[in-house]
Length: 354
Image (cartoon, rainbow, N blue to C red; front, side):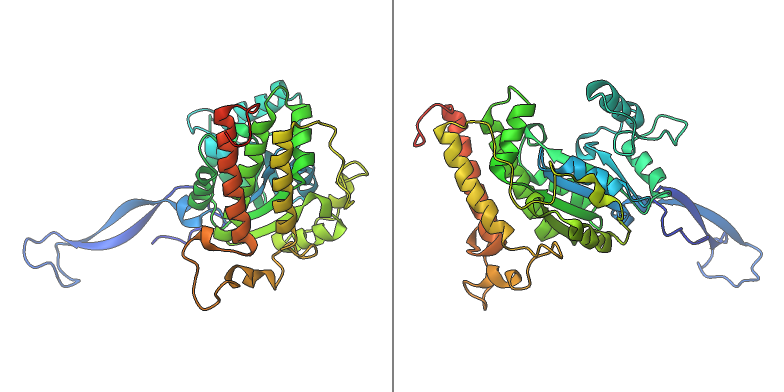
């Protein structure tokens, strides 16, 4: 192969290899002195994008209104990170110019100022896809990625679609998974995103929660951050995880979004059915939160063995058979999702037993 491929190459490159080809109609092998022996150059393409699997990718993943935006700004304070804000690459067609769409979304729809978190620099002099901009920015930053604040619009089917995208394109990327108290998060969504029904946001939160568990269990590089537990020590752990300095990150948090273990009390009044669902969801959240170390943002050392507590000598047959730890959280969330589906089919004003 002619020349070494740069370690940070993220594009399709055409390379070449010199091979000896004999034009003689006789045997395939021929001596080097054969006058019919010549050297030709064979050109071929290697798709380094898929070989790389997004080593330079980084993602924040969480439900809408759980602190993903302030976390994105905190991480973008590092000169080594570039995180887009809700570019939603899994749902983007490669046909349109990405920079035009992304900048218009933040400028016209959300009226955001152009910052690293809301503006895609036009590095390319032609219409280009999100992949092209990822490749270009990966030459400038150690990590390039996206902040996903997941709402009802992201889950036309299940969380498995997003997981499939991550595995195909960013299996070796870094993932910062984040959650916040369900009652506080869903109440905030209902205040900001009216008039979407509460049941839609409850389902979206459950789907986001399931996606977080799926990413945690199936992708190699992950950390779990809970909004109520964010502290300056959290950014020391994230800095070590990413291999970057985050000196300014803690300054993005203030008394309204910050370093307090007491969640803000929701001011939205849920009906009885919604309140019951959120109580169950809050119990799942509380148990799940206990599985993680607040300092390292990883599973507690003893939590890693909870899933096998039922029968340590035999592996579980499927995720639903796990009776402890993360497996139990997934099982309970899936059951709650089915319950929400029945309520949606019957109407949220019907009886719980419908």
